[in-house]
Image (cartoon, rainbow, N blue to C red):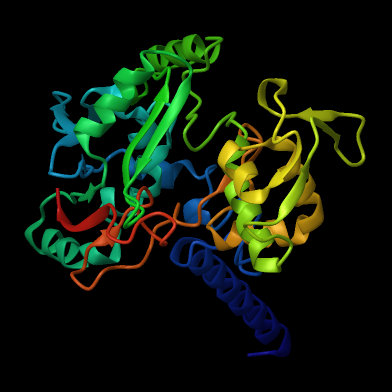
Length: 370
């Protein structure tokens, strides 16, 4: 073999090796490219633009979402298209009541929200706890089935909160104070996620247009997302904790309580609720806390400082996080993520579970087929 042939052969070998590495990286390791393990849109298998991965989620018999006690609020309905293949469609029981919890699973939009998204790895059967089930289906030739996600939501409390709002704009979240488990999570007005579960793209688009143009914003999850409400006087608890921790105040200390106070860096004057006076201009901190006086707490927050307030919020499970532009900026609970497996092999859900800020016993991903 002469020198030129050897050089060409070597070049071809290098090209085939490079191609093999690239294909392995993209298809085997789900990397955007050989030299890039992560892009601005995540790995290939989590990139929302990858419709192959997204479509795969909609061709699986998805597991159910259950309430505390076992009531099913989201299930999968199977139908035969008459051509030997099967279609799966999500069915939501009492959809508007539980929409803030379940979110939706939409084949038409190739998207998912709420627990459908947070618990997706279990619901579609990809979670490590379902490995034995996947091996079993591989041997038997059965279709892959997803696992069940059990929440801490109690149906009677959820219904009571929903009925109390009576269609008014607002939200209710009920927690178990001993564990942090979420017992109810309601947003009003709501919508029926079944409108997005259809495979009829025209119907789904029509529903989306109608709901998006509704001035009451039913698609906003007022409890945890969308255009959320400011924390208001509930934040005084965090201000108090930070002030006590830093020694800026004691419970019996007297504080100034003017009728109005000009906030620093602005010309805006803050007054007490309804323009009322708080202790005649000076009162004890305990009284200001009990009456939820605004002006003493505004001054106390200034004295504590932004850094200490932020730290105090994080210690109590609150932090600011950047989110999707449609949501703006939001206060986040660290428990809103999937936690590790329990010893019994079950996985805690992202709703009512995760950190002590959310749940110590919370919703669980049950490591079984639905």
